[in-house]
Length: 121
Image (cartoon, rainbow, N blue to C red; front, side, top):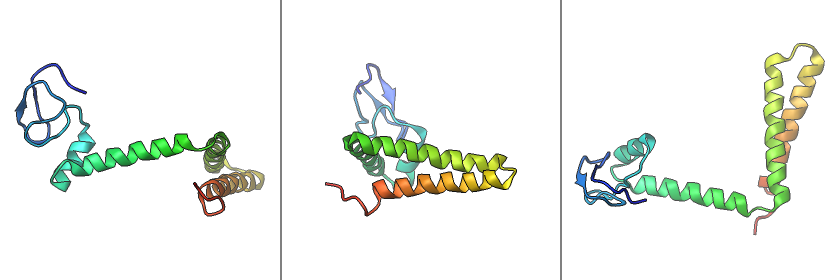
């Protein structure tokens, strides 16, 4: 997104006219602190661009899944988290068995939907 004012690059410190990216290092005008740290450690902004593209692709792949698989994903993750959370409050052995069963059920469902049992097209 193009900013409508002069700005200073957070990566290289260059002064820029209103633009989408730095004229010196091609760093976007809008960048997070984590992205700046990653760019500095990598030596260029290419690592950040790669990370953004991977995140965008992962999000698009998740939304491209059929509805049943997204529903199973959310339910399995909830089961897994509830199973882990019960461990914090588990007193009697019944709660420990329930905790283990829920965590295993969630983990197995996640494995089934993302493992080798179903091939993605």
